[in-house]
Length: 247
Length: 252
Image 1: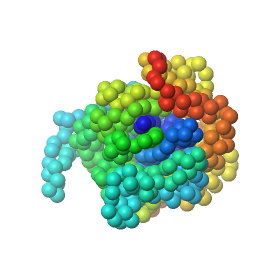
Image 2 (image 1 turned 90 degrees about the vertical axis):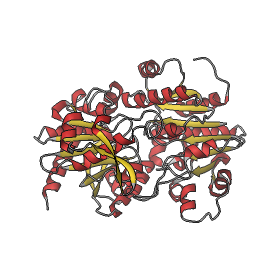
Image 3 (image 1 turned 30 degrees about the vertical axis):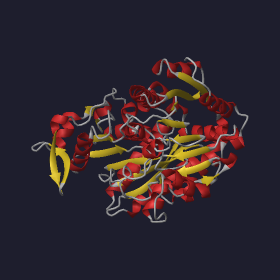
Image 4 (image 1 turned 120 degrees about the vertical axis):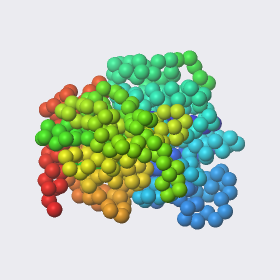
């Protein structure tokens, strides 16, 4: 199963991806967390720690620097460059852009190509996309199983979410679940529903414990597993694994 | 003044860039605010009605440069004329030019994107201030989209993920013809936060914008901070940042 997590920058994609991945792993599924951001931070939210996260090498950079002489299949690359972390989640970074004026990130190894090549993968892949719609646009017509659109109840975030939902629907890219994030009250949730009608919505409350975890660079699942916001993300994970229900 | 705001997603780039542009315009500068994010964002922070307008196809022509097919502004159309013709006029007289927003399959608006870069790099130095809002992350900044800027401001929250992004962006200082690179500490909650940003990025911190609920409240409404809560602490902090950058650019 392939799950893509998309949304505006800062909406909570990476935190959501991390809790989803660990929830899947805890339920016994082989889980790959694929950091598709060229500015990769998923390791922090998964609980790898700051130092390890900063040292992780992208699959693409390993190829560029010749560390990987004969590139096998994408799956082999991930086996080789992935790193195991908390709850047995395997984390791989697709392509970190580490220096000004590098090679073109659109050529060679890319998130959309990796995902398209993963048809034979067993277990779950959680792909944490780069901010905005670039990766969805480049996916062409290759679907995933579920697209989680993370949307804050702000005008900017909902604008990105609306466009993402339109694209996914237009191209049949997967089942959409909206994670309405940092919801403070019923008005916030209504704001999300009015921009994204007829979609499955999971409401994630505004959660100070998640803000604290981010400030401390730790995984919310480790520092505050019982906080309402974290529990809501775990429930979102269970929902992703379940059959679709009508909105 | 020529300044570009970069940083991790959600750090506050658009909110700061939009407010900064208007406060700079109120001091008598002619300000071109540019949003090179394929997702609209800066328009909300400026208080400009939502528009997707980039450089239209009629203003663009195909050409061959170094043996490669590419696009440029139609001959006879200067960058300055293109701005006056295609930018939106916003509050306080700020002109907003946006990248052609993402539409359809890949490459469909490559012409618009390249023309956008030509315009931004071709606007004359004299008589114009440019304030740029770049998309989240390292992709655009590392590919030269901030070349117009004399000062690149990395907007950094005091969180490990934002600091890590800031450390990566600090490598822009190693570019040929490197701009001046500085940081602004964003959403700070205590006095130590600016120090965290300085130590965590290795960049000089030239300003601090405190955590301010008026910003998130305004974001919910899609209203510009400057219209919604002109007396917010964040507005005062951004106004101070305007003064700082004006003074620094005046120095040789």
